[in-house]
Image (cartoon, rainbow, N blue to C red; front, side):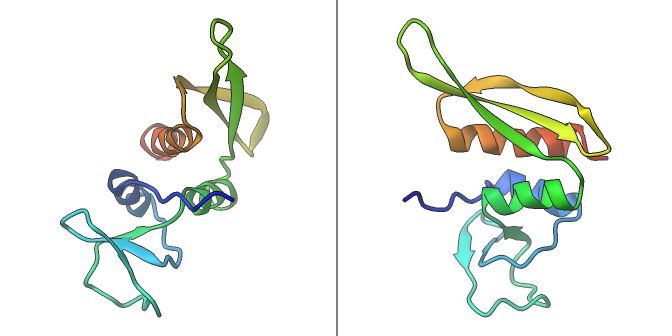
Length: 124
């Protein structure tokens, strides 16, 4: 079973900027350290950025912003290694699917890049 992968510090900052405000078990502080916060309180001021898992961020993008992310896997012909690439759509126009540039050898790196791309380039 795989472990949860959390968004990077930079992505957490972008999520906050775009309105992400879900309850998270981890937060980032100014020194970019991730801290576990049991019994999280919304009014806590000892942190700057909530640190969701990548899947929490993807769900928020899909449910709140109407932008689902799809990760596809391909196979490199010359060495039969997998690579991952990302696509996204807008729920208000589901017939259009947009690629996110880049091929990634790691699934989590691909998800992180897709979240970051959407936060920087798609959501105003």
